[in-house]
Length: 217
Image (cartoon, rainbow, N blue to C red; front, side, top):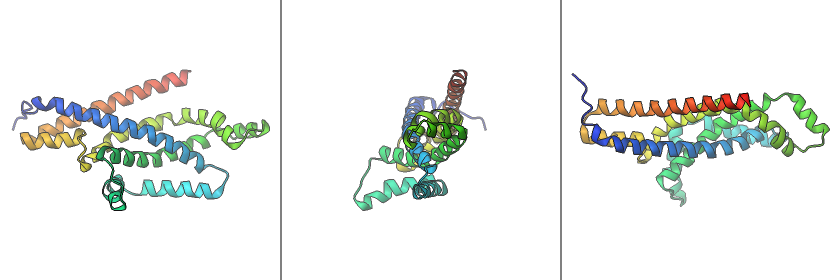
């Protein structure tokens, strides 16, 4: 049986629109997840043991439970507590929280990779823990973390396909709609897969370029 993509052609604009929503959700989730992850990672290495334990527990729970369950808890669970969120907002929050757990561990590793002499020098200068972290440790750690955070962005683009379970019209959801109209399941999801591959490839190449420029700088 020969593949026939002619039935998919009229719907390419819908698939590309879905891809744009995928990129928006992934970018917002990475941005917010990175901010939250940096805070969690910084607390993870804080000198106050209870805070370290709290951050470790947060990371353990987030990384130990499926993203799909986290999305369901936010979108379907919160309304039972009186909090109704739009599907896109709930999806971004779910991806943000999930991403923050992984970014938090990336940040912890990046901070611990900074030579201990930097901490000792900051103590000699009389800097507080907050100022040491902000002006000395994190700028160096972020350079070490950049490749891993880039990989997290690529992962988010792929995991955003789970947003289709919340009826968000991202790429996978649009692919399902096109399949239901054309009945060309194989052809539809080949195109969807190619679009995902293009998005992740462009993202990977862009991040590699940024990483090289940062390293040279």
